[in-house]
Image 1: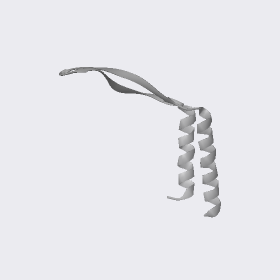
Image 2: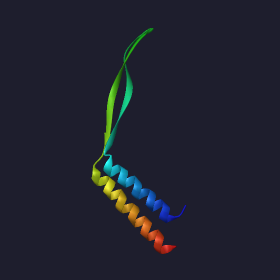
Image 3: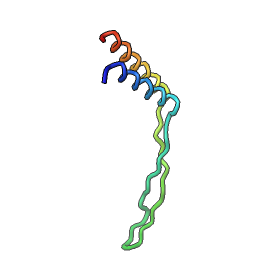
Image 4: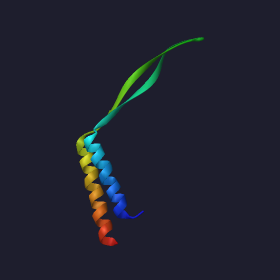
Length: 72
């Protein structure tokens, strides 16, 4: 895999991170555990980031893309 394709992949990842600034996932927590009795609850968790991180990753991917293009 050459530097141009890696740079392009990084740009695409940065674009996706700029458009989608987070996601939600569900975890199951044990509330009560007494012998055979077990009570669980679903808890919503959120992972989020700033869109500027995605822009920074796109810039980094652009640098990798163009530096790889010059060295080929």
